[in-house]
Image 1 (cartoon, rainbow over the protein chains, first blue to last red):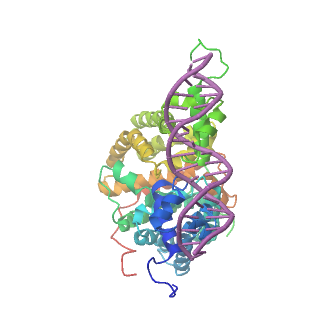
Image 2: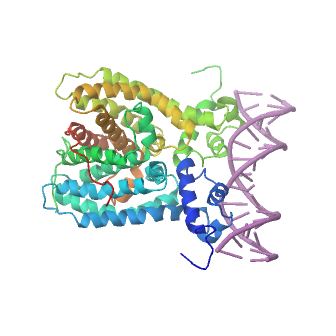
Image 3: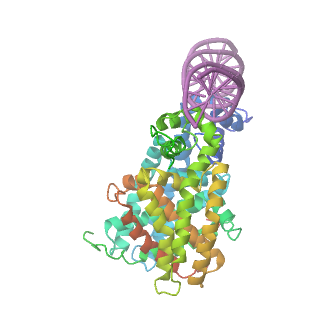
Length: 224
Length: 224
DNA sequence: GTCTATATAGCGATAGAC
DNA sequence: GTCTATCGCTATATAGAC
């Protein structure tokens, strides 16, 4: 950005975010030390304090940097959906999935980088992280829920919420647990190409979303 | 069990496992210290070394204690399935889901205890933990895959593996991210009763598994 | 088998020179 | 904006008394 500097290192701030993302993914938030992060970034330990205030601030910045553009793109794709089309459900589903898959594919370390971090993020014990993630996702979730409500009027608000939760779970698991999948499948599934996963996800999830309401439960479609 | 001891504390080993499970769930593996664990267990710090060798050994024991009975019960229920019945798929699905839901429901802290831990386990950065989980799950996964292969012959081995992965993901996410669900749904979904979740899971996942094979390829490839 | 006491190491954070 | 040096704290692990 700034041209007053010789480019001996691109940008302290950005280097720190890259290194932090990499080491948080590899070791977890608590286990990745600022010493290791600053060393990998090639900057001084004290730079964390200067640029982010604390480790907590660095964590927050690592998530915000990826989640904000991700959810912006989702909203953009959602707005481009034609909710009256025959494949409206698939369109909306893809508006949710594609930006995530694309982000993982384009991230520095692919599925072993921010993807793994994302896979852990919803069950992250760190309260501060959960707050950030919640804030970043709430609006997106609400918008997609509104679209699904229109497309799946046979489901109660409760069941619809659960189903969206399952969608998010399958996606998070897919993005975050590629390594375990490869191991457990004995090599049948390779995770090098996330686009394969996307195709499989889409057919599985759209069928699940279209399923009749769970038996023995009130099938109210009270309010649209 | 043993009657040679006065019951001033039930069992140091068991107390340690309970406390560790609770604190690992709440703070994560790395962030839960042995000091906090031994204090909550009401035993001495050095007892960890004596009974489990190290923190790593304690971690391993915490997972094994729950996962072994869980997967034993799954295998038992799977063997009781009638693969020629009309609802064979639902039977097999329930053989996978029910023991997990039951375990969570009966665990000391329910969904906030081992459940949260389980939700993180597949993307756990700790290599040792992943090894334990893998060893504990491999046989179970293979048996269920064999059953699904019979019931869903229209799917390639690869797509079938992915679908089983999605099933596991939805389940893990459901079990592990109840708190985030409640927050994101604005209170529409309460997670007090895991049996509700089970009914919703079953209808969603069985429809997903039955879906036709993924059409062509797709969607998010380069050049966007 | 359980305890106290401690060795050894690494942590996050910051003061202050440049 | 970046650095060195260090403070104060907590961690895991273990030696040795009982």
